[in-house]
Length: 420
Image (cartoon, rainbow, N blue to C red; front, top):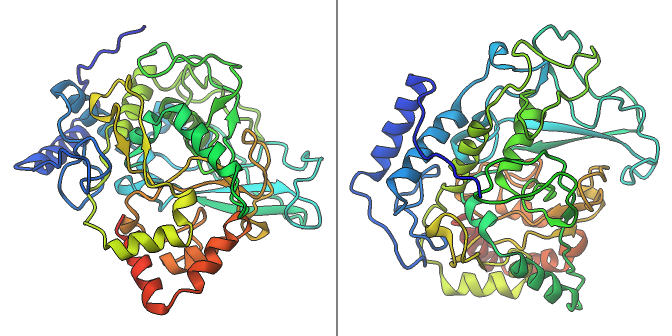
């Protein structure tokens, strides 16, 4: 197994100083909730109503790595760093400000049949892929925009929160498989599916967390709105490449572009693999913000209308997960990590992310919702009530049960979900 150095490395003094000051301020005199109950899903989250804090109790080495990854997460990249030739945003934090959602977003496009849902067999109209890349750098002159064609469906994806993602990565494979098997026996139409993906990244030489190989099939996807990435290092390398045009040894090629450029102002690989791993470790070490003790009636309502069928309150993590505070705990993530058909209205026309179809979305983890201002994958909902009402497909029965509640019970349930 490759061994990673935990020694922090200074990048930009200003960014690192800000990161360290923030972390020290958060930890000064902080108490911990060691029993993992209301303190954020196990692992002893720091008490403090804010996202972006590290898990309490981690070693000095992991804390130094968290701080260094925090600086990289905030770092705006420039052309000299390898930004471009085309890009969407210049930093991780532009799409995950304060480690929650947005304001940055990605515009997706797909050629669809006349129903506006089914992907067309011929996608050649989108010669440079299914993602808009509106900004140019490093000599590029032509951005990638959606063509003005009635057959092209254009949708938006708001950057999802990244807090608590280490808990998600740590969940045991057989736990996810157990929930999938239990749902397969249900008679109410809720039948989530694991997104089994093929590894498209090159191997990460650091095998501390995983040792996936390119072309490896049947791996459980967990990250991304359609669960197309299995690990946080893959999620990070994909974002560097797709959102910023920054290549790594895991994703060494620039995305295709109209100018035919295959490199940028930083020849060859743009981002060292250690930086990929530091950003991934930063997300792994982000605590689930502590939650207020819930009203038992609200918890009962959450189960009664079957929200808990997909937003599973907790799942067990691996005993061998490399971050001890996340190993062998009940992670309160409120997701099953499965794909669910949510109906035509939410369909995006895309069907290339593993086994996910146009209508499929991974159950969103209900972590830190009180820090959100919009909800659903595209931000269409401005409240918990609007978000629940937008559920369809497999979630129709649960939606209808929620809407049949009295106004007071709806408000109580909304308040509970909004407190997570």
